[in-house]
Length: 221
Image (tube, rainbow, N blue to C red):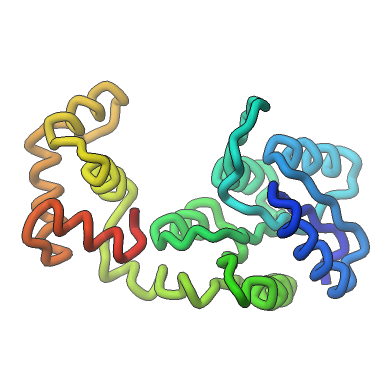
């Protein structure tokens, strides 16, 4: 079992629950922070002191306040620490259940576990820690189909961006202008039209509104 774990969570009651769980599991050193920037600094300091954390348990969403943050979200923190400390085990503990987000965290950032906050969240978190300690990955049942449906969906981050902007009410012309400004490719109106037509066919959607409704139901945006 892990001996040194960092909890990154800005809700005090959840922090206490996770701390109690880790204590019951026999974790001898448990640290807690409410900001992702503080988490990174503690992880970096521990590495420099040759006494590294073995695991980080982090939320994804953090309430914005007066304090400026270099890493304002769990997504940003995970990307940073998994790039700089690839051997550090990371479990995400979050209410977010968007399948594309889960796939990105595993496939791109190589997290070790994803647990949804729910009535059985702490129980699942216990199982996740145990499985990761054995060298396995863990995925909550709420998002278990994130990978079983991956090949069928054949959807990438560009598609998600298109659909997300469409759901915000942007027209295809406005999306094209936005992508040109942000240097996102392809940005031409014809390319965007072709991609959206392909997605409508893929998801058997009657129109753009129907398409957005379908992907929202699937938890992709």
